[in-house]
Length: 262
Image (cartoon, rainbow, N blue to C red; front, side, top):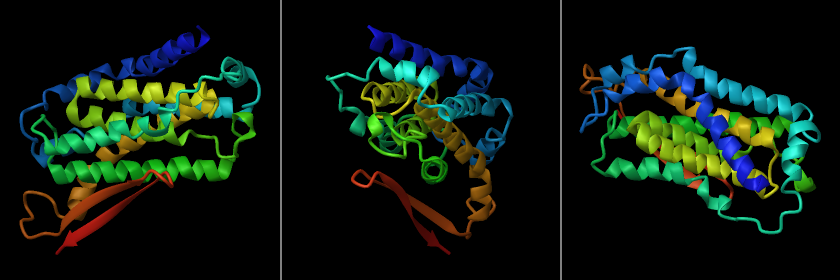
């Protein structure tokens, strides 16, 4: 019963953190047309607003505070519920990539999107590069010990970071329905990382925040990238950029191949 209570509580934590952003979500819904909207319209809606930082920053801050004393307090209490768990659910080993995979797969369908294909690929690549830089950078610096002494790169949770990056990309591009489906998968991934005694609670909270922030930052940077590579209506003969994202399941690494046409 403790496991189910924790999963419900964690999911409510993620959902509640986004209630304050309801106005932002509604402001995007009018863009859900049957075709991708014009790049200049997308640029207008990608402006940085402080309220968009509230949820991810709160999650990162909470996770960081818990990480300061990860062996005691809330972290110890939550992980104590699953410490002797013998029925681990190993679906978390691959479930974290499902939201990102769905984001890419939907690019070849006729489902409504807010941006053109090359813009979606650019946002995907940027989000995952930012996620890798922040997430794996912190792992190398913090060197937090995992539950059960199974390693020293626990903070933040990489699986959770990847999952929430994909979930927020889905929400940004395809609206609420697909977005919250992605968040459900990401929340389940975060729960399983704690349930399987692979991470502390603070690790998955910070990972969720980093993932959300990375995806939002990618869309904030999209207009700048369009100007940099000349992908606007006024530059018919400008540089064209093709971004091909890559994920290596064996090494758990992400990368991107770029092809530029001048």
